[in-house]
Length: 183
Image (cartoon, rainbow, N blue to C red; front, side, top):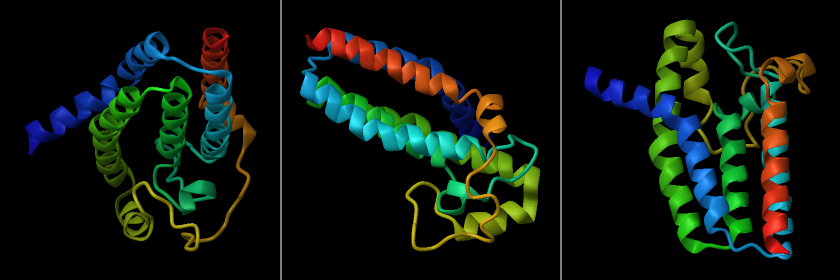
């Protein structure tokens, strides 16, 4: 079990550099059109919005996030990242890149969610276990919310503290590269 967790932790640590590497491959291999980039951007907006909303509720390792989107899914940041990756793959107009994205997400982000659940269980004990039993790991159940609503909007200072603006700026840069490649 220890070796298994060690591998999962290594995948977790590799997720950001691996994501950047995959992004570079996507940008090189992309064959976008203006329509595909705009369609991808339309799908990316909910992903960016979800990540922004989630980051405004996240106090990493200080409090268990259960309000806002965390009342519906335990991993709204990764769900937002999934939407962004899917949007990018569609904007690139490549079936093999789409397949690569699904394989990458399943092999890197699913283990990351498992490791993070172990970490939260160690930090928050019974409170996390109760939350874990009632809120799905990834796909939200919008008809069923966990606990009290709390501050539904969240705190914009957490958006800055969690450096979520970097995702917005990065996606804007990627969008500009794809548009330049499309024309």
